[in-house]
Image (cartoon, rainbow, N blue to C red):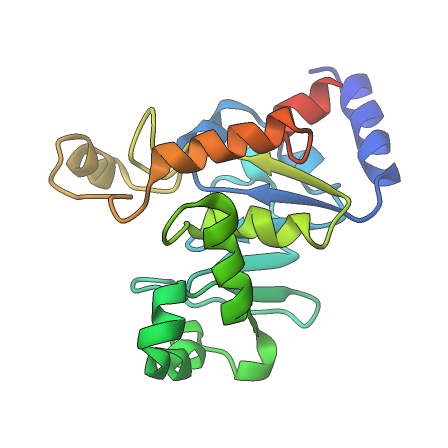
Length: 215
């Protein structure tokens, strides 16, 4: 992509208002060096154990929102004042294991006033609307954004179809995943999630970053 084309796209992005770009953790993000363009968006959201180090030329380094599930193995982050933290806890935990909600602050390493816990009723709506039990943090982030932004752009949502690894996984971990020695993504209905997001794209509710940049 020429510098002139990049500048034109940057100008296009800067005009957009009330727009969010959600970057998921699929390995497909390493196919394009979109970093400079991604940093131009008004709101850039990242998910769970995202990694900026060594990947910024592909996915940029701007972080406005951190979506996470306060799940086991979640890496703690240093949160800047202007950054927003949104936590999606599965409906099942809201209903049957409420004591876990008191541990979110410790898991994140931040005080409770530094994050927003999506309420039980909204998590219930996500499940009823999608007809998917325990939707992933990624799908929840899309649904949350649809309610709050005029345009929702997504990137790196691979749904564990081509590979089971994340773009930031080490070579050793990728091999272990490839040969089934580590199970990834088995708690979720990845195929149903892909079909649902494809439906949102067909309905022009959501657009992929590739589609947005090619328009």
